[in-house]
Image 1: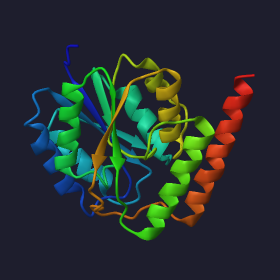
Image 2: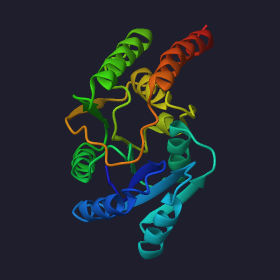
Image 3: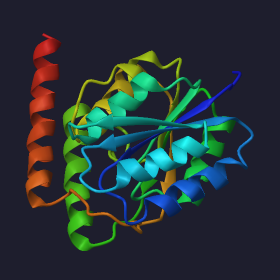
Length: 232
């Protein structure tokens, strides 16, 4: 498979406190990748200076594309990026939690395995509450949807453009990662899970809390019901 361009989708939500260093480091590590990369920075309902910082970099580097979304949502930001992506390989990741060296590693995995899905399997969380919440959610989704994968929400996620169903994701919220994994199983897309041990958050404030966790647990069950009704 010929890889002419790697599209990297980075949803950004109120990350002005660390965004300049992050973008600069991402650009540096991708300079060492043997494939041209484009960065799609999706400004996800930001109320800080994130947009202005991204615009400054875009003015200096043609590899950077900016999408400014007034409406929030992790899934919506990913979907907007997917609609803009031009690459034969596509990556999306949580920019607040993905270290530059980890992004570089996963891009290399994608280049050397261009006909499979590459997804992170984060082995650790930064506190016990996140570990417990992640365990419950992963057990729930594995049971409901008969998924063989761990760390449903783990990013980076990488896939080839030829896996067209993954370009047609519909969820606008956090359930987009569950939807992604469900499609991989139902379409029999081969998946390579790569362990990732980094837990450090670069900055910004996580939107995950007890309320959002409960919403995800309920959302996964409602998604299962919709799929079940659609299959009847």
